[in-house]
Amino acid sequence: MSRPSQAKQPTPDHHGVSVIQSQSHAIVAPGLQQVPQLVPANTSAGGGKAAKMKKPSADKESDEYRQRRERNNLAVKKSRMRSKQKAMDTQQRVNELKEENERLEAKIKLLSKELSVLKDLFLEHAHNLADNVHPPAASVETSVTSHVGN
Amino acid sequence: MSRPSQAKQPTPDHHGVSVIQSQSHAIVAPGLQQVPQLVPANTSAGGGKAAKMKKPSADKESDEYRQRRERNNLAVKKSRMRSKQKAMDTQQRVNELKEENERLEAKIKLLSKELSVLKDLFLEHAHNLADNVHPPAASVETSVTSHVGN
DNA sequence: TAAGATTGCGCAATCG
DNA sequence: TCGATTGCGCAATCTT
Image (cartoon, rainbow over all chains, first blue to last red; front, side, top):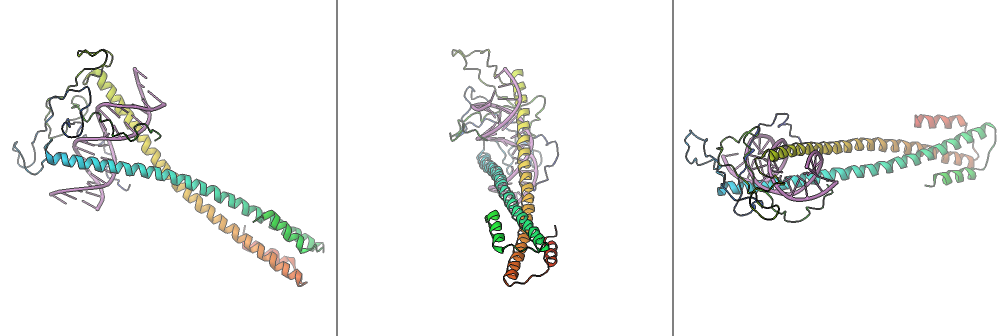
């Protein structure tokens, strides 16, 4: 999130090439002969000599390289796990909010009904006053509590 | 989601091997020489003869193969786009539900207040009755409407 | 500059 | 058989 960088660029074609892992982990896919072995050209970096170059030890199959790759693979796995977890959490959040919503809607319905009842009683009472009639207050209380049932 | 299959197995090491794409799209990574070219062994399938096998035209670099790969790559891209879109939609849903929730909470607060006012008026009136006092109904109506402001 | 985190991409195994 | 998914590794970038 919050990474607008890689925006809309057509993705500058990178790699598209891979090398056999052989050795250590990464058992070669069954049905494939362990052949050739691709080797990267150690060119570039520095003046232009095509020899060994020291710093950018980007040599394939080198310890440096393999270690970096392995660490990155772990990081990738970790990152993806987080990503999936986050997605699940978000989905869970949606469910919780939905429930909360229903709960609130129900409460609103209840309060509205209570209010409606009280208002009706008020009107009724107002009429009674207008007609100069005075029914016992007890009956009023009873009506309210029975309807509200709070 | 919902695919317990590949469950907890140590991942039956597949591939880990790749072949240079060369040709058509897939520009080789800069700094790499276009070398060897890995070739799969067309073994297996059928009796056990190591020759050409007919059906499982799983030959690498073959038309069949490249076409299938390309189609799959498209499908993958499509699938991933959907996945991301879904995630964004879910996040959006969360935001909407949150807003809805606040709206409902506010409404509940308002209704509760209205109810509170009306109940207080009821109590006050009851006391008036008990004290045999009868204030004009007009004042009551005024109070209610001003508080409710509906 | 180094190292971990993200992200796009292609491959292969599966699923449906 | 074929598209849809998913785990995985690579490389380019971004973030720290």
